[in-house]
Image (cartoon, rainbow over all chains, first blue to last red; front, side, top):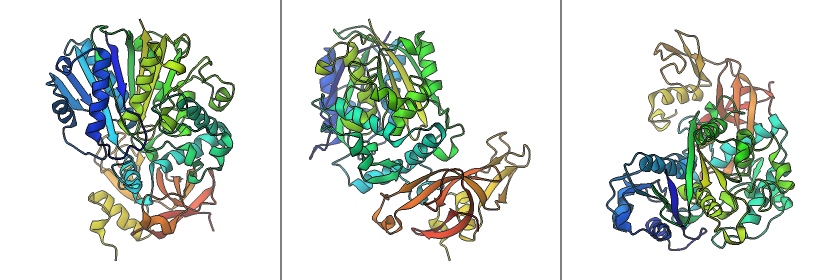
Length: 377
Length: 129
């Protein structure tokens, strides 16, 4: 069995003078302290990547920095799905008996460590270097193509998408570490400046600095008894021009594998943590996985179903759209918030009856999907 | 003349963009299983055969999706903004990314033109004449 025994994070936002390693260390120490473990008791370490600090072996850099000498350590790369993928591998490592306590950590000074143009250009490389990037494509452009087609095919409106941004901002307002906390309205979203139409500025997540970490253990060693019950992945394409069936991007296949692994159904899930790099990302994932009908995410948000009092509380930390996006740590924040909700320690964001949770990460342009089912035991 | 080395480090991509500079859109067809594919790989993704040949598309197709980019990735491209990036389904059965007239819509019939963008010539799809 695998338990998320400790979590920790820095605040997210533009943190002048921050470094990727400084953010990683702060988050890692917080997570180890939360699990009640000293660095010397960690025997596995997984991390992702940092665009501001490219390195061929980032996991051992972090291990050395923290004074950890792990029996297993390396970095993973699955874009925005990396955080959930790290947690999945950590479960495999402790389930197999290879490790007792695996530290997963993600950090990057993505906002302050480079110019905005640099960030946009680096991230655009998720597209094909020869057949997409030369057109002046950006990550918002790839998702703009997704949004335009999905809205056309299923009748989703700009107002439906705007509901996603408004909801994430409302939730972030209750989290002291969130990047963007001022309330916004659907009108604000729909009047914000065009980025890659139909996507506008407030349809897009911010670029943030931040660090976040969790400790996955073989035994339930802390008061937070949150178990990873099932996991799954699906990878159907890398580049959006090569995606074949736009109603089946791999999200549902990934979620199905995780649910089958857990022996559970969608209706058993009491808390949702879904990747939300753009408003369209969140709507598409909710609908393809099947939490709501096609074109139903906006109406479900308007009806309050995703709120703290709703039947499907969603991204109560504020998601990438408002808690912030510092790269790998952006997607890992969904997992950390789920642990806090299931452990009953989400403070004023705490939802009732959060006994089970579902986490979904999306890397690239609906390219890499990793899903996870958690439960309180 | 286009400096082909600057187009790509990949020989297949260099050939493809050299063709675009001459007003041609290439795609691959497998001699063994007849599958058409884009982008060029030199190997069929349907059956694995290396007996693939390059053919030239007629340049006619349909807009599958389209986005209008107002925030380009670099100052050098600012002069072109806003520009539209589309996914176009060519009549030959392959899909490619390209530029398009921003006034076009999903489902619109289009034909290829070739225009300068940044430091190269790119295909840009417009309404049929």
